Length: 161
Image 1 (cartoon, helix red, strand yellow):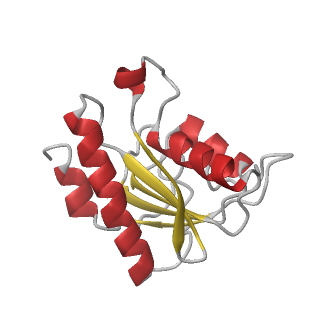
Image 2: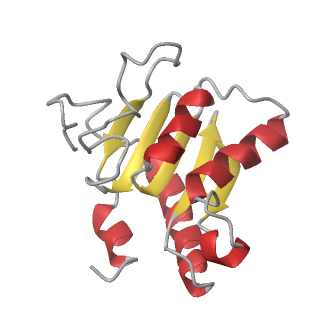
């Protein structure tokens, strides 16, 4: 598990068996994104043991800078449930959410984030600007718990590293 730049661990030490299976689904989405010419990132939103939203990176495919996998997964879940508040839900993603995605996750009030591969220079958890987990941003919801490094080798292999 990763430590945030502020020296704090977040969340549980390990992902649950269900979260690991959800990560495998996210990896399949990431493989599809790569095959379509985008960054290999896949994400799912789960609640009560079921996937309620999914997304894969489509920045190049859609010519849309906001078409990140995490944002698409949150949008899909909100659309399916017809709500904007995903309190109690989990986001599972192959790559650490960037700052933009971290804002969306916090706005949707997602309770837990499960991360495969870290991105310390722009990640919302492990960078020097950990907005995903910063509890001191006025007006923002409570930060989610985070477990990182889940199926990390498989997620990193998507990038050939």
